[in-house]
Length: 495
Image (cartoon, rainbow, N blue to C red):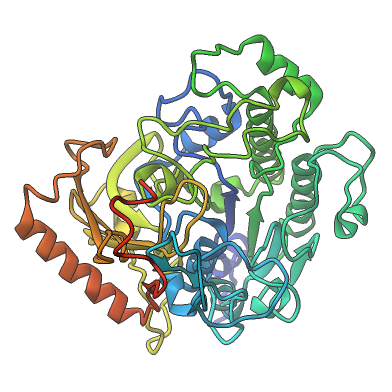
């Protein structure tokens, strides 16, 4: 007897047997976009981010997402590696060019007014680190990087870290202007006309990649690491004038050029999302939206590269968070963050679970159903369960910024345990002992009240946890400045 298989049954049986295609991944990383620079948290009446808002409304918003550093290069290293960046000596945003240095060391000498010798940061992300990109590539993904890298030029570029595509393949920033013509030779190779905004061009490049690979058998990992809204602050003139007209000088967010840059970045997000939807792959794409550190509140307030009417207006304000980029207060390390994956992650949801930039690697792997290599030891945690409304496992995190710069008064490390946050300013007292600050973020999100003297036992407990992280990550710490004139100074020189 012959059995005749109906053609439809054959198709159905093949479809049932065929493995499900892995989701595409789009990782959108803003540069210097503050926690209050979008409409996501109800903290701005000035900036306009309709495309970002529309995207995040389709996923889960994180209210307590942090970066491992208050500046860009270390945070980027933490995303790529799943590790705290001090493991690699990367503590400052100096990975664009210049001297190649693969470890951190204290400076040989410093000003006698400084109590502490700050560190010289490593200036390259080492290529022997197994990255998120390499992991995805090993599991069948096509990988592409668009925009700012700032972890090193060749032989430390995206190509050496697992990316198949890198556009515009520039190692650091991009020059001195966000509006074409650009001084950066790498950008000059991209199709553009005078007056184009860099984010428009980069988003078009990313959209072209999406369209070219939407129907491939291989899923793609698209890293869109924006140049915006980093200085030099320079917006489209029409956008700057639009925000000048609605400017309220009493509002701490009132720089029309910065606002115009936020809008151009928002446009770029809209372009990328539109490409995913036009190609019918939005529903099978995991989209992550975040920033590399807090908003720049300290400078350059007199930036002359933008229209003259904004030259003396500070960049942004992260209120209700304290300070911004370059600081370990909340404004420097708490960042806007969301995960979007239609039909997989609930829409219009919010979580207060803690998340750190070291967690992206294991969380992404878990979300898409891939097992991490058993021999890979990382600091990050798989926090995928918080995206379904469950409680996460992270109740501690470590921060490190051993530098004098911008908002930061001196080399500092920090640890958060539940709602308590401790900051240790290394050797910052007159006698070169550590200066300690303690805050309860549940009661004091603005970090106005240093309660270290009221809770000595909590200081002791958190200090021990900070020492644990420093030892665990083999972090190089600053040392006392040997030429600091202890006997001649009667007050702190940096507070």
